[in-house]
Amino acid sequence: MRVVVVGMAYSVVTLPVDGFPVEYRPVRDAAISTSVAGSGFTAARTFAALGDEVYLAAPLGEDAEAAAVDAAAYGYGINSAMSPRSLARSPRAVVLEDACGHRQISRDLGDARTAHVELDLGALATSDLLVVDGVLPTSALITGARATGVPVTAALGSMRSPPGLEQQPYLRADLVVMGHCPTVDEEVLLRTWRQRSTARLVVVTLGERGAIGMGLSEELIRVPARDLGPGRRPAGLGATYAATLAHYVFARGCETRAAMEYAATAAAWRITHPDGPDGLGEDVLEAATARPDGVAQAP
Image (cartoon, rainbow, N blue to C red; front, side):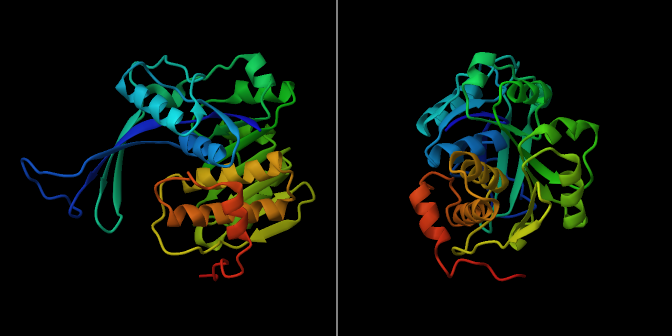
């Protein structure tokens, strides 16, 4: 399917450290690496890995950081031509990471959080799915997609309360996926969003406990997490889950439980492949989902 992803994408410089707190040294030699991350970029990579035609619309500037996003997108088969170049500085991040996988992330998003991404109505109307994250202001885009009959997926961050004024636009999405704050009753959170949303499916992810979802029938569906091997939880795991869920709901027409099981497997696969969702094709994912030994035990 043809997917337009509206969300954050930024260049990342990763610096390995011996531990935290970081010991001061005037000069040190280290294997510095660069990459591109962000919820929108990770979702776009996941869709591309699953075989979708992907267009990324992320607020950028006209600088080296934007060029890094474009180059990475091209390498993963993602078209970034819809990304506006109106920012004075593209968003960026620096990550300090020790040998145990502990990471300290310093982000400089600048004006990107408040940037309005404008899409040509014709380009939007010819898409099969619009995906928005919970960072950028996307109310107008959701309205435009709904007017042209294009389904919308809202991939939100962790939620701890019923939808407020800022979350009202997401209630009009066809699929809503959100994380869960441990201090909140997850079933109450799910039912509140379900009752106020017109979505065909609302899902709350619960980390190592899997995820719960509720369709229009308001039947609670609980899908456990999968375990495909050891690994560290990578950044962007929620974006991978949401993109996989959307792919199997809209591109493959799967029923809710099956789509959530594929999404759970994709998240588990990412843990064992922390470099990214590349290689996560439908054949790999469906074979891993069929493994009888892949269901994680409840903690």
